[in-house]
View 1 (tube, rainbow, N blue to C red):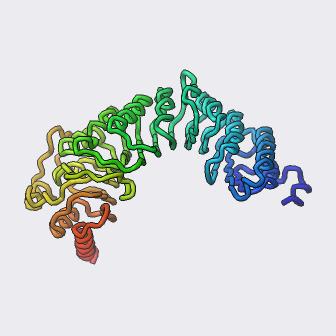
View 2: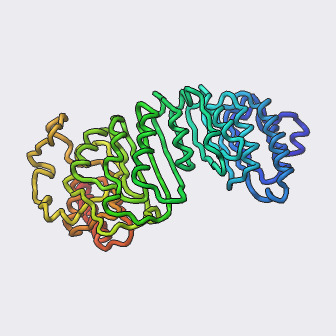
View 3: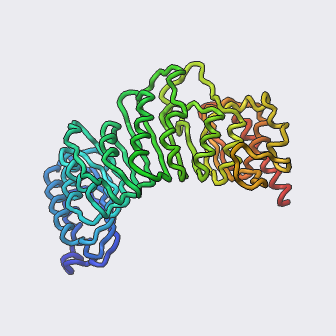
Length: 419
């Protein structure tokens, strides 16, 4: 590479996309030779090998490289920065570079150090930025240092934000957008969050935009011992009901949301175009505590409402009491199954010959109470003929047997339909 660069001052001046990896200071001096006025997409992969031993040389080389890139890559539209771990001095140099890029449309970067408020203000003022994936290390930052323009992120469409709740709150309250439609939030907290915090976060986000299509909220926190009465309910979702075009909703508080069949009926009415609905912790490790005496309140009747009326639903994660399938005698009620004289639910304004099956492909039942494997599998097999994956949390012989029976039913149906 050195010989090539000595032969031509800019051997790659026509390169549009550059992926640069460096773990030593000498590598940074090569970066200006790889970019030019045609470069629109730049990925910087900053490796930490040997960083501590030669930090001063690294920082000098990075500053020099960034200064040259600013002069050469004048049409840079996308910047992606990968850093193996938080390092305040490196993040400080990076923040200065970001604050000098005028035309970025997409950015995926970590921010930290005392310099990041200036870089964040620069991004918030940009009329070009449409996609931002920000991981922010607040450190000992005084939140009073954060300032935002009056019309922050005016054209932002997609926001991914990973940090602390205390930093996100002033950030999102600075935004009043008609373009922001996709928000994915991840928070790592050092102490358990009260239920009121969940509602406040959702309310602040919903107030920042007029039309959410995608909303994901994940909170990891230490284990807490909540009373049954302190579990979040569907009330935390109320601000989201104003966003009727919601297509994907993922809520992971680390604890279950108590849903009733009535709550599910409201969800069906409010988000008719929903394709992905996850309202339980993603995996067992995300559950930060058990609640004595907890049982899901939703029943198979609520699940039927979801599967019948959300006609585009492909992924579902909701907890319910499958053991009540027998008690409600749903499997014998012909009004729930294909070929019956189906009666529309109250408020249903669709065609009377509604679709009888769901396009659901993945169903995560979490800690749902299992029922009779044969009856539950038969019920799911009829409702969800395209179901590819059935998941649950922890060890459950009941759900394991249900999945086994369901696979047998699907195999038999496949042999009958195509054999």
